[in-house]
Image (cartoon, rainbow, N blue to C red; front, side, top):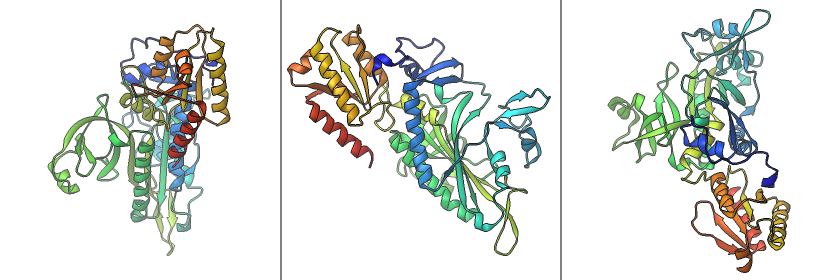
Amino acid sequence: MRQSHLFTKTRKEAPADEVSKNAEFLIRGGFIYKEMAGAYAFLPLGLRVLNKIMNIIREEMNAIGGQEIVMTSLQRPELWKSHFEQDRWDDKNVDNWFKTKLKDGGERGLAFTHEEPISNMLEQFVSSYRDLPFSVYQFQNKFRNEKRVQAGIMRTLEFIMKDLYSFSKNEAEHNIFYEKVKQAYINIFKRAGIGHITYLTFASGGVFSKFSHEFQTITPAGEDVIYINEENNIAINKEVFTDDVKKDLGLNGSFKEAKAVEVGNIFTLGTKFSKPHLVFEDETGKKNPVFMGSYGIGPARLMGVVVEVLSDDQGIIWPESIAPFQVHLLALANGEDEEILSYADKIYESLLKANIEVLFDDREGVSAGEKFADSDLLGIPLRAVVSERSLKEGGIELKKRAEEKGKIVSLPELLKLLKTDRALDSR
């Protein structure tokens, strides 16, 4: 991609009402556009990052047997009123609904979750023990009428959610899959570059189970407080942090308090959403409610958290796995030096031919200082600079985003280094 062809442009300032680091850098870099408070559009650079995050999640869900679907955002009120035990259409029970009127006088909801709809749908497909176990997941827009939306893309009114639902014959079978999801989530956060500061965290299980599990990433921008047991590399949410819980979990030693943001959660639902409709016949012919679990990750929230924790004063520092491009090529020629422009074009074409993702800053009339500042803001892992100085010293100045100094390499060396890095990343 030639940077001169991007319709987006970098900005020196973010909107005055943005207080979060992720919103500031993502808006200034042209990754997202603020439509209104709590609602953001993803622009070409931002969509590349979001899609890479979603592909990591998709690969891990497929690896444990998840089958991808897409359900509707529009929801029937009767499904939420009477199909299951609690009337979750009632605003007294769920206060973050977005609802809309139909022209014929009816009413619909914009989905905030999908336990009721997925359970209802699967009544058409589950009848025998032979149909179980299985799991389905989706990437789908959710809508939640949040009161506070001041955390950039970490908390919004409209967002994409990856929600996975599992269906088992019994709790023992469910627990086996639950552990697979737990490891898949650990893999996701490691691959996204934040595994080293993300902790499996015990939290309230609500009405479903004694505990649920959250995945909490340490950041000053976090809304939660957790207590980390470094000896076991796990944490307990402040809401359930008591001596009895520590004893129940068998956790001894010291705990470190930290602010954190939730990047994922997994729940045992049991039979709450399957009774009395989603049932199966066992080997004896007895009818039993299906045992369920639900597992959520917000890809955009994960993207925002990465920016919060992996950035410096100059801008973003993307992990290679989710960066919009692998290398940022800068031509410092001021539109006059044909040798520099010609060599930079040659490098660009060579990288494209080698299937290397490259953003080429070929903009004319932009100073070297502006190009360097924009490169730091965009946060692409490697910066390759072609200038009068680099040519005199033998080629291209290559520097990692987080490094102070670079080194001069030839074009063949550059291609070899990038291909090697890509091979290592794919392991």
